[in-house]
Image 1 (cartoon, one colour):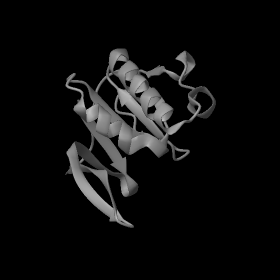
Image 2 (spheres, rainbow, N blue to C red):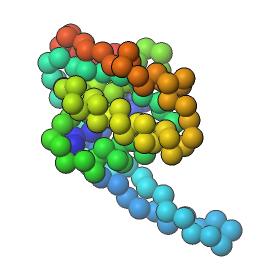
Image 3 (tube, rainbow, N blue to C red):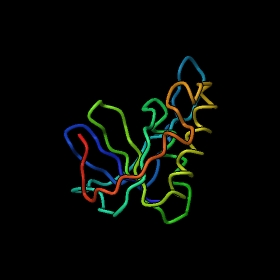
Length: 135
């Protein structure tokens, strides 16, 4: 799955993988993962975006799980006017995969999905505007 992420200053990266880091703290070792990517001018333009809000707290874990999927879909994580991230996909199938992965990440963190980000059916929407950039 191709994943694009908007950074501060309207910069875009295409996430290509992850890098393992071993962190030693007080004699204990733990693994952390860092996103690895390449800079792009802007994400690809696709007609008929499907989108939903995404919690920023679990964004790295979400992206790490999505890049492991080999579905051929494209997911673009951009910022909205209110500063939250919005996941945009080209099909409802890809958006369902994103939503399922968000549920897995949030359940692992112990958050309530419906209360925090309304991950029910009403949170999914389709935008027919082509090339519209938010933020």
